[in-house]
Length: 313
Ligand code: RIB
Ligand code: CA
Image (cartoon, rainbow, N blue to C red; front, side, top):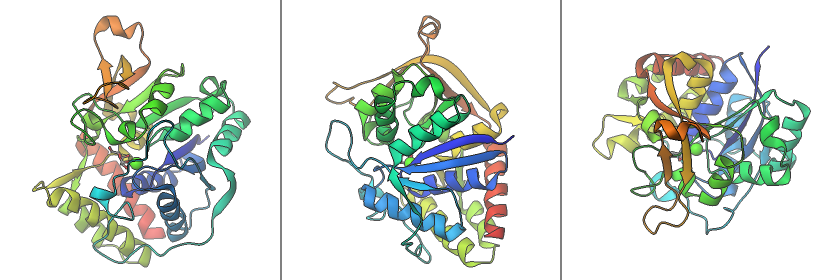
């Protein structure tokens, strides 16, 4: 039986890739998608999600989630990613006016997990506002989940600040509630995600494809690789797809139990994931922290599925 999943996301192009991989592989059954503010404000991330769904002909229900962090002003990545939260070097994603399911994304997430107790893996690849709000609405939810997997945090410093990774930094209070919820968090931080990176060669693989969806996707993929090019780097880390590869091919990764605390008070470190991986911390472990990835086979898995999906949509 296919693994039941719920995706919480702030599209963003790496979010788009993660979603596409979940839809492309029959081992996954995506129950729903809840959208959160993050890379851009919620109206933008939601519009991106509906447009992605329409482009590929996905049928997974999409719900609007939280628009604001729990306790701080909103911060986005639009200064890096542009007004739409993602850039293309090719044709723009056609907007979609349909596909939004009624109801709040947090309630939809709670309902889906309650309907399938012990069977749903929650994959969160944006700020954890929706997840924390769901845990507050339904305190039994952490115990009803099969697993909680996130792209977020870091063991090696941040990207939003010197200390904090973007998803955690965008809503540290939400992250603190999630890591204290009682369910172990499989944490894929910057340190792990940077071991999978895509460059010009991967763009060329996609350019062999025909079809409108492939052409549009490839333009955004190239725009994503541009994030590295403009900084003088040859390849761009694959953030959100990394935990999806682990769900499909766990043997390609090494995770270690540890205690992860979210810094809330530090003037320079707010939003930092303080990862204690020392043996005594394992007794108080609240997370499985991804440390190593076999980048080459992981990237081969990603590209095979993206190419297969784009060849048929
Ligand atoms: O730090 C990387 C994370 O921030 C990714 O989820 C990306 O989509 C952005 O949300
Ligand atoms: Ca994201």
